[in-house]
Length: 310
Image (cartoon, rainbow, N blue to C red; front, top):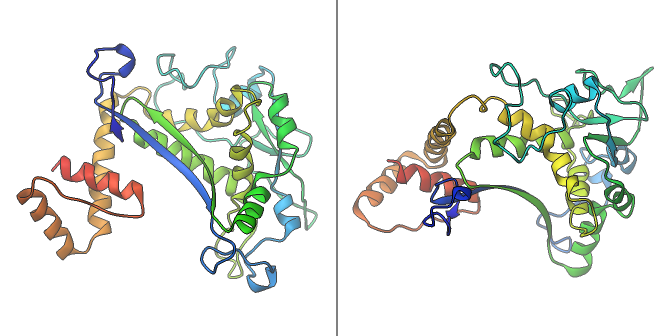
């Protein structure tokens, strides 16, 4: 959250808010020459690390353009007859009944056929695991994006850069809004991360699902090319934006602000033990200026919001 420089100019584009709000999702590859954040060179040292063959089975190889059919529209949460611009909040609500949130259907599918059912992708066939690369169902053609995606994977580039430069490498995405719609933006990125990183693999305890960040890193890194279609990012975010905003479309924006304030208070209370928390409140009352520090920016924003709203 940063001050909105145009908020005092009375422009309608500023949404009459004094701040600009943002939520980011960042993936960082640590210095591969050190011991911290080091990825093991041998899968034998860590039984939970998927093999290269298993990783390849979850690789995104293409954004597949889907024509305007009812099945495709249902998969992408779009209304019949249109591929709407999800960045324009002034358009009609995404769900026509304006009652319940949409049921999320992943745009990811496997093989050459479109899996346009609400069922999750099944990797098991006749007792054997299919290692088929995945595609993403999108609402616009992106030939240049697909060409770039077929080149060297960004997850591999980041690993090599970290090793050769002895520095970390990062790739990420940020959503920006002139209004406090942080709950919807957080849910958008959270849903996107969970969808791209989910696998059918289990850890050695067979209790937890292994998540793989390589697919989403490859997609986000591919957007750094200047010649890829501008529609690429919109197409990728489209189903997640539609889903996350579906429960807010028929409610005033102030409810999202109230929700964020409530969550911020919970996060502040949960992040500090009772004594430091009491000292923080006392300091906030007695001092005009206080300095908060944390390696987690989301906690800093939540703490500042909770203290301001006290």
